[in-house]
Length: 463
Image (cartoon, rainbow, N blue to C red; front, side, top):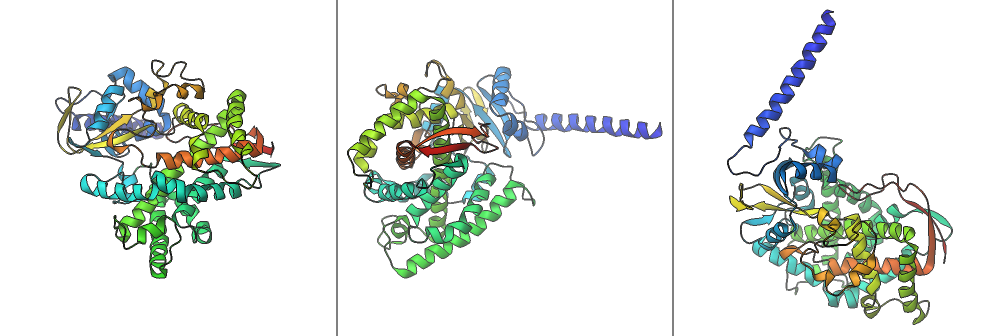
């Protein structure tokens, strides 16, 4: 009996302590004029619910508090905005008290010179350096030939094999970007680089708790290892004086308009690898999935690419004019990004107390511009849960103000065209060379990242 009494006492004590902690955290963030909402636990906030429940958590909070509510996620007090017009206003007014507000884990791991983390003149300079590397002229003259050569090689031996398309597209996205950055050195160091890079990616969306076995700790350690590899790469390329006609040669060029120090250069390379990896790998995997499930779409896409191949010899690469002619391919990519919601939203941070939507947003708080639900709004996309690439062929739909698949405002993704070129080239060689069927492991998770936890295996054969 005494033992039972002790157990019950401990149980009730923990219950009381939990209620007290929750109550204390709510009181701590109770300030006149704040939006409604809940703040969860001290330190952790509602991060666990946000990461585990994802869209269900957001919908539940919206049903309780409306389209504009407070929370505490990923280590930060945060205002969540789910209103399309308000989201557009927030993204278009960065200079008026709003700056990028990415989680601390992302800032620590991607680096303080990461283009998503800086603003003002520093952002303008880094963005200029990035655009010089991935401009339409660069894509046409230097990057697309490298992408074409890599995709041919990467897809060359898939015939009569069962492959995990998730693993293959991850490797593809990383190796393709790395070859564009350092064409000579990519193959020799990628074996050591790639596992560290995958750890870095996982760490960017985690609580910033630096304890062994946490994703944050592993990601931060991976960044340090990657930084060492890249510093050596930059120094050796600079010392050699060789022009390999790749991104690294442009970065170390003493006559470059946008001169960067080593730290800025390394963070820019990590940014290029990270942003391209997330979007290109996941969109490519999900496009394969949707094309498998929608034969009429696959037939139309294959027809577009077979027409290109008929104008060429088997060994001829695709060129920039071929890429720009891939109208239906572009529609497939946009529809894949919309339906799978590759990007759920963007974060901003207030630099001063602000009034938004009639509420106070204190200085230093994050605003999460949550765009996921916009992708499924039937007023914007009729029959929104149907995979229908033809909707994107309507004149002007890509330029509508609610179209935020590639960001919005002054922060629209500068690598949009490069990413589209990589995915388009992959699809070109995949659908003209192969047919495929799923053989298991088709369970999908769509939050916080789109992924197949058990892989997505397909049996590939010649078309």
